Image (cartoon, rainbow, N blue to C red; front, side, top):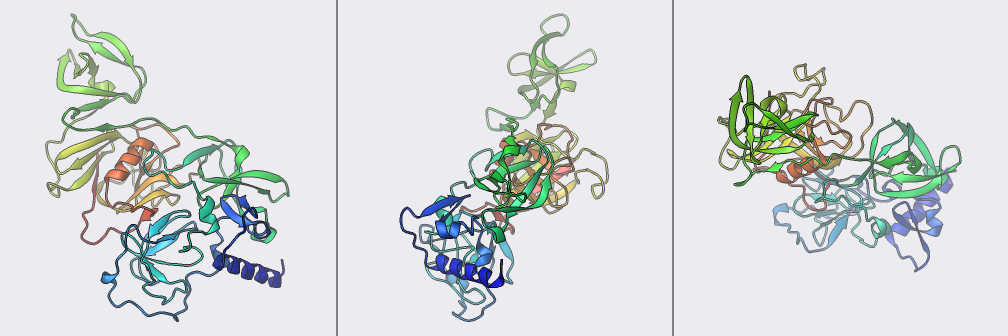
Length: 470
């Protein structure tokens, strides 16, 4: 495509975005973006932010607000949206300010009625709810009639075990992005290994690099894979226990195959029914020793052998930092368990997977680093694993319910295996989808409505502490 033609297209697109009005019956849906037919043949993608106006370094237009603390945002007031794969939320109305969070395409947040400044941002800086500032423009419009928003219906499900629908690849396959120079076509930008996991938010029919037409599945970041190479991803239904007056520690989890309950009513222990792996066995807290074998009493009147189950007991001693309201997470790499505490009160218990090498060097080996850390950031989903990879033998995009620790490790949901309660993986603390969603919702910082991630804890806000121990 010639430079003149490319420039003309950009100018037409800019004019279309700024003065969008489409007569009824003259639109088509391409992927998850609504476009006029004349434009749709050229720009069939949801992320067109790089083609038009947005945040710039233009320092003209508008004065800085001298007292940002006086800026108020009505939660029910006007909205600002994201149509980009990642819209930054800044601590102050400046491109040099720290980024405190992000938004994703299709989401909306309440904003101030007017820009607080236009310095460095041609579209204006808006304060958003509950904090922060966004540079309005093509990637973050205040015009909610924007075509992308008209059809962007697949938003993360914040109250479900998984935020998106996930699929796995049935074979090695290409990862594509839209080829802007060729219209309804894509180009290869990478390869995915077999059994890789992806979240899907839409679809698009386009030409692959060989010129063949493919039905493509759209990922949340705007890239594509061949839909014919995907199958539904089955995830573990494992779920931990909410602890209250009725359900208390100790609790036993069955991790192994071939485990049975036992009756101690006779002269010697007798096997009863089998117990499925990942079953949760409520205990009475009492145990008996028969010969050399210790048995825990179960609330249904039977017993389980101590060696057959993972027993989580209530702590008798506590770290010095524990105050009455302090939220903290107790992770045992030997037991493969996670207990949520509020002060000295345990409120939730679950199984987890840690690094496959429990005693190795966390800097060089697949080992979970032990120590006392803080949760410093949260992402509804993330494809950036931090100091430890999410998985070794396949690729994973949009891992759910990711919480970053000050060590660089993550607590996150694992949708590609069910080996919870045993060591498994490169070193992050991995939970089932149900448990990861619960821990994510329970722990601070809260990800505000419309945000996709929080990257900084608000000053003065209590941080959740994570103790990783043997």
